[in-house]
Image 1 (cartoon, rainbow, N blue to C red):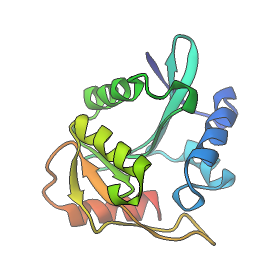
Image 2 (image 1 turned 90 degrees about the vertical axis):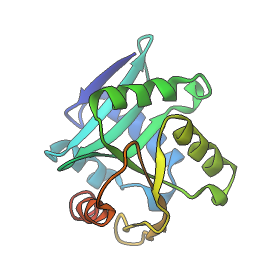
Image 3 (image 1 turned 135 degrees about the vertical axis):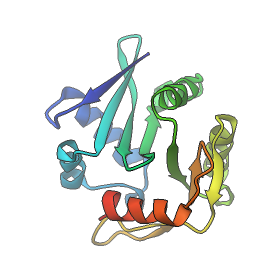
Image 4 (image 1 turned 180 degrees about the vertical axis):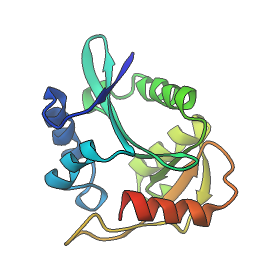
Length: 170
């Protein structure tokens, strides 16, 4: 498995990533096209293409923040799901980033949310905040009540949330 940073919105993989991103994540959980391509010029962001057997099988959008990495989006494309590839990707994250924070839908919202939460628990993430609110991604989009997970025990969750709000969702 290869993890290749995409540094330009002109990269051929960006269209495939955005198409899947737009259909997988609900409107309130994602950026529109222009804000999405602006990620490539942000100094804290890495958009990483996940390659397996010469195929682009998914991606990560991560933010390198002060003392942790925030995983904004993590997707294995639909045709590659249920092959344990997601666990390999979390292994890559753990090898490269000792402190990881991410947000997910609360497990009570449905079977997919329950499955995702179980996946992250199996991969050593713990629930650190059930009262987290994801800010709106822009005009016409709603805030969302989500859960924050981490692969470590953060000391000051309030500071972490403020940094995510200030830098990721500004």
